[in-house]
Figure 1 (tube, rainbow, N blue to C red):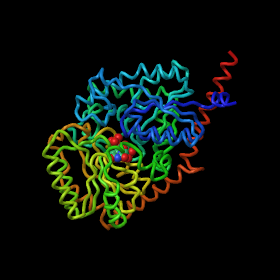
Figure 2: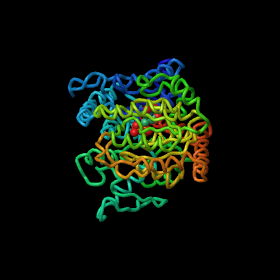
Figure 3: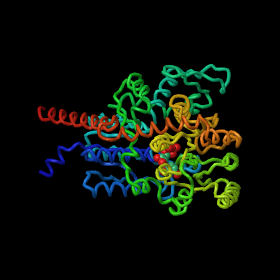
Figure 4: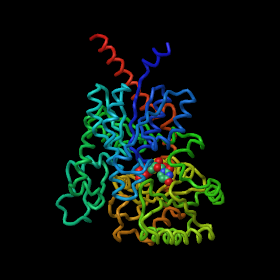
Length: 497
Ligand code: UDP
């Protein structure tokens, strides 16, 4: 009976891409599949698995069929020290290149694993275009996991198709993104450089988008109520099936212990300190400032942020990823940190923050975000309005969704899309612009009140959609049922042969 049962059980293998913004939501999605009775295997290298294994063990011990399949990272071959296996550890372009090469070298061992594991379906990150062919060889569906909004995928699609940024008189001239139900204006400088003008990276990203069309469908960590126009548009323009099942993080990490143990917790400082600091503040009075897991800002920008936050007079909690390149930054920030400790106006968290706990804390009243999709969903889930400060990739599109479509964000005025660890070259957002945005968001004006109200409404919708009967909950069940039917018809076909 045991083996009969496990033989019939749907087996889905998940392949996350090793960067927190892609890995965290995929692991949470995999855990939700297991909670719905699916037999789940997650493929990961050792150091990456160590960031989520605790949750997998806890789910397994609660009776769910979920496990991690480890593969070794080729550290020696690419010349990296042991344990450096995640894009977030790429503090220089050279290191980033080595980590990316190591990830590319995993293709053969992963294909062999797919072959040995014989899953009924693979859910693989958008970055692994080659898994389309791997799934075809095994005769199983490949689901494309897109780790951002429908909105951003639609914008990518239309900009790649129509190239509305070509032939403008300058890189700062505005153009309207074609094909969208809202008027969205951007400048060429806000596009990723590989899309602005074709370069060596274009040859990497174009096949990635193209691979989506050859997949069985796309899985989104989003929800219907948030971007229904773009869910519809995405389904029609991209021409493949899709399911939005988010926000997965809120759904998979309901209790505080799970929220606290998510991500790179080994880098978190003493809990009591930041918690005591937040506990001492009035409700909704603190601005949380975070640029996600990858971005390391340079000293000139750090100085402007510090002065901007201090001059705004509002309370803030600011996550700073250490920048090993610049000693002067460290001494400036140490002085600043000491001054903030004394005035009790600001608190610095070094490297990694327990983001879900901070966003959920009643003292937190808003966030300055780089518009990474996970941070947006997590802020929304806590009903928080945002100051938008995009840095790279599709973050400038997400900003448009927040500011122009949903009207729950104030733009700080970021103008140039650049890789997260590239030099600022003097292009910084000035302290005055920061103060202006903070005053609008955290002040008591009408604009702030209305944004706050809209964000709370979306926060309520985010909570409802993942509960029984909600859109995201239903979508997940529909997808799992569809995969089960595929498995059944495949095995009937095999029997008939
Ligand atoms: N994160 C965190 N603590 C940090 C920085 C990031 O918990 O100090 C988490 C954050 O909650 C989110 C993910 O890492 O789930 C970052 O993803 P996002 O899409 O926001 O941005 P990215 O890091 O990919 O730029």
